[in-house]
Length: 146
Image (tube, rainbow, N blue to C red; front, side, top):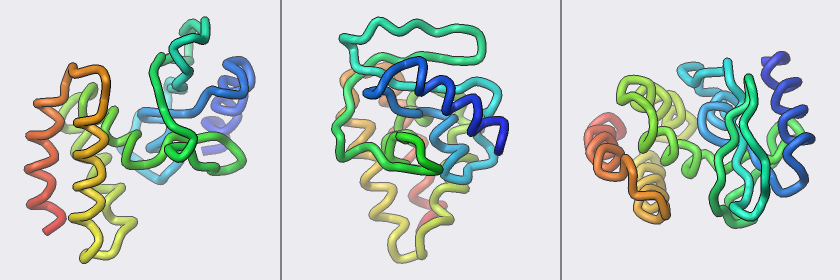
């Protein structure tokens, strides 16, 4: 984890004050061991001209300040939003493993609400790629959380 924190801190510093950690990097910081920690994923507003480089994958998009949390002193996209990104864009096996690990953070009677929040995040994404697949995976996850 120390190596990831060092690389994530450097990536955020280079990307600027309005960047946040996202995708696998955010999930790893939330404790999802299935998340890939080899590349640091950051999200920057569309107006920013930041490019990916070896070891850092830059995503451009929108996020609200309320969707950002502070973990280990770093700006991190909220767990439900980060999971929505991974469910839409990553392999089903990795996405399901991350969901299963993340949902364990919640008591059983709150897991359905957590899954519903992820569904809202998926539907709200401006990029429609992967939404259908993600919603199907999420429906199968509902059985896992029930």
